Length: 229
Image (tube, rainbow, N blue to C red; front, side, top):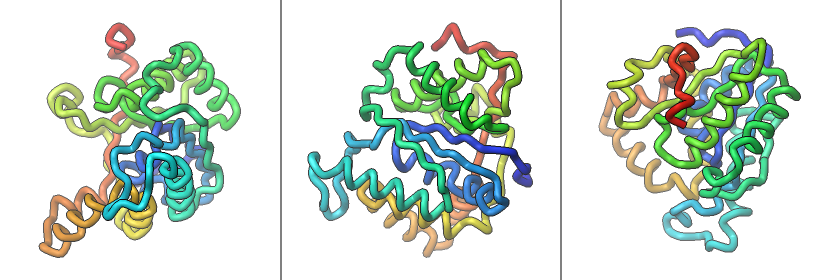
């Protein structure tokens, strides 16, 4: 599916590297078209489980390392508007709901996106992912003129309940930039990249397909998930 031209794209995720795996190719495409892209990353991922492979970070140094990795990923994508919002990793779920909605609303009001990309509530696995998704959806729900909302979903029940993705972007031309974005987050991705490159060398088509296709769901406003938030 061709990637539509947008006026402004806003991407909202809680952790450094969330952008790399799921949407860096799509973001790179928009950037190359001259579309303004804003990436709001809620935390620095300072509680990330990995410290490098072999380890090169400590719990004390990891926040600054991840900050630099996030900037390197943004540079690989071509982003010039990277927002680090300063919330604490693994505590986003405990932030006041209304505070989170106001934070998202202020950001949306500022950049006026025609498209927002975030996680899909109830299908994003990690509590920080879910809290971010809820805040974005609630903020957009309050708008009179809603932008498009494309959501990343990867919970085990996604296909059973949401079906196949509504949107699949062929980002083959941005493959190298997607890889560069993932490699930028080397403190967290070293082991995964090693396994991925092994599979690619063996000609694994599923891995190549994952690397060159990015999948999204349109948020389904007709199915009100508010009661399950």
